[in-house]
Image (cartoon, rainbow, N blue to C red; front, side, top):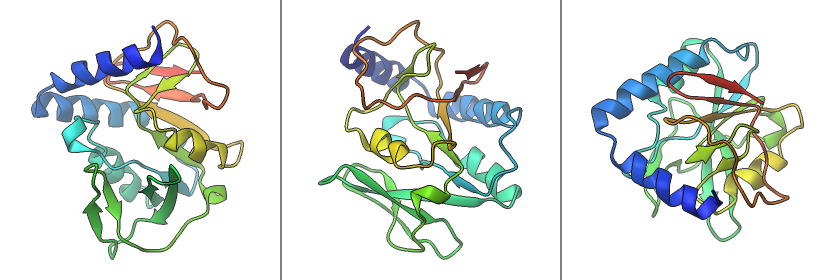
Length: 187
């Protein structure tokens, strides 16, 4: 399937999930993450859930990172340049929903992309080669391209892999892993 068809299909599937189901599956994804050998690093980038889009509840991952005393990095989106500016999440960080209902830091300690070791990547769909479909703006492809080459990219999905995503662009960045409630995919 092509990206746009997958985008629409997975938005519909996600839209049918109940809040309870989202929380149960999000917890299962967080528990799956604990099986990965990724916990020796320092800086972890985490997307904060857009509740209106019925995204994975990343609070469970946030709790794991906090419990392991990791540096948690979150983003602020610039829709004019389609770039992300990354900030350290601290007790003093104030979050505000932007026009797209994305929780973002108002300000804080800016973190260079070169410092980030692991990125948890939001997505709508992914395939068996690690290609992903997001919302189509390219924020994460731009961001991931600017990270160091050894940065580990981990997609989080409620759903299992598609066999193949058609019409992949040259600028698309593949995942290293994708974690679902039932499985860890390694690419």
